[in-house]
Length: 154
Image (cartoon, rainbow, N blue to C red; front, side, top):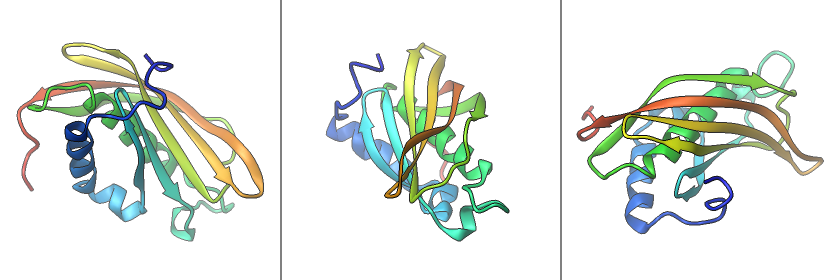
């Protein structure tokens, strides 16, 4: 599925549903993240660098890196679900491969297997900067559960 959907765009209805859900996420707004791409089974989230997102050495904090990876996978899964379904993370594991330094991070969630109940996604996070090559700084895997019914109103 990953190769087929790498550059494909989601339908306008799916795009709207994912974008509206993303905009309800307080953490993503707080971090300053935005969606860069929505395709069938694949979502990219961009996180610009800010001092508030760093750890003591000046790299992106692992918590920020993990948060955008988790959301990218969750929204990748949501692109393949029926309109009346929602998604929740059951678990994820992430490996931090290199210091996350750059102008921004790009988290990519890609559906590996979409099931009736559980969906498995690959998570990748790249550091991108004008002065450095695009670098894979984290990768992982995530399991999500499909939940029937509209998102809970806040």
